[in-house]
Length: 264
Image 1 (cartoon, rainbow, N blue to C red):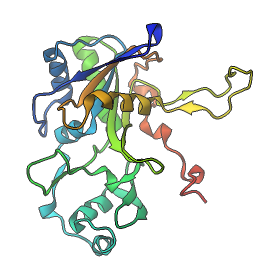
Image 2 (cartoon, rainbow, N blue to C red; image 1 turned 30 degrees about the vertical axis):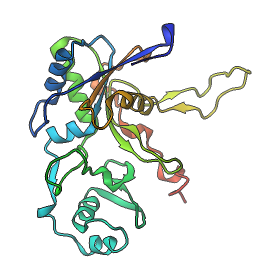
Image 3 (cartoon, rainbow, N blue to C red; image 1 turned 180 degrees about the horizontal axis):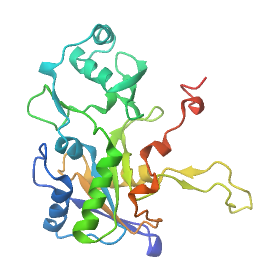
Image 4 (cartoon, one colour; image 1 turned 90 degrees about the vertical axis):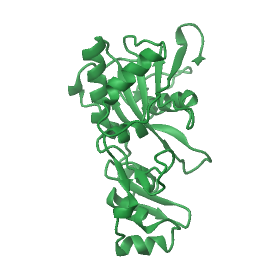
């Protein structure tokens, strides 16, 4: 997939993985092998967008509901929100705050700081056993860093890595991919202090480029195509080659005091 023209164009390559990822699989090695088997290659400063699902599977984040005993709180919420109380119990365990409960939605703040439905716990395309669910990675930033390190040591190529997941949106129908982990690229591109076309100084504009890149990659990844990885090439950015840069997904979180819905 190619978008744009001339020097502004970017190309997105789908990477199919012909394997059901399992616990303790070396996910970086598997991605590298799959890139080769798809007759692709990695170039300097390419951006890898990797679906959360294969990261979580390789890190053993599968959980069987059979072993979950619902708490009183989970049972109480299940009377409102029509979900399995065992699943609700897992959602509570993966969360630090409940944002909203309705008969259709259970919105929480996860331990990572994400505001999302069901703490990001996934039941689709996980297992033939409907009682098996998949939790988010414990530290998506570190997961991204490990892949970045592997590609540098294996191929001597500096790449950036974005771990993506699908989130809903409060003001629009449909879901979109967003970044939940990052390595090698600044999450935000700030235009603050720049002058616009009409000579006005921009004061608040910051673009969440890692979310835009994650969303664009989903166009070739899909949900049923067995394409959990995409390579984005041609996007111009300042690469961050060190793991000590302090880059984290947390830099795009809005503080609660500035949150229009949760702020005081």
